[in-house]
Length: 118
Length: 107
Image 1 (cartoon, each protein chain N blue to C red):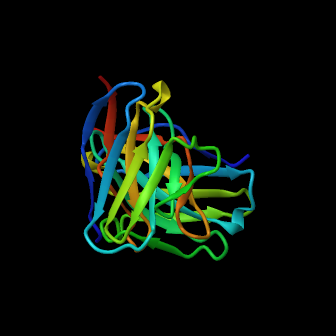
Image 2: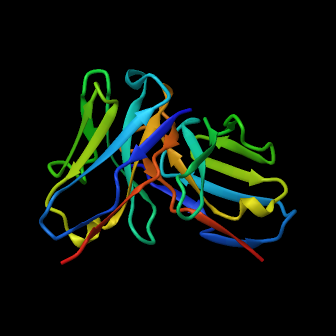
Image 3: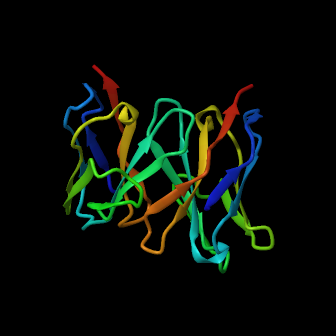
């Protein structure tokens, strides 16, 4: 079955960086785009960016441009999301999400809590 | 960016009730809308895609409708396991955007 298993919770200080991993299994890695979405406490979901596992091309939300990098390791079927220059407003649960060929999201990772606090 | 306005933000209902949640897009998105169910501590679960197509394995009491800018998710007869938060998402354009969610609580 399709699984997206994310790395564990992180606590970071303002100004630091965080790198969250998403290990995929149960399907052909190169056939589906992977997106990153976050949900801050009490807020709605916010799309951050996505990557094509085939060629590694990534596209980001303007809001995060310059601070977020999404990469993939095709040998291990893992996607990574790195967010730099963290601030308290980045405290959120971060999700990797698989997108179908017709673009809707069908499988979500379990979420990774990132807390930014001094 | 396309704004997704979802209403109500919360509602109280009883088992067996018919529940309707609406989602309005700030510009037309044809049928490129999905609905999800989210329970605390769990990953969101896809219910409906392409505005009205039920995801495999989702109970038939869930249904979606609409196109363009106005969309609806209906639960025909609320069950105990349906108390959760529901949210919409458009995938017509980038950036992908989401409704703020509707919390369905027990009356």
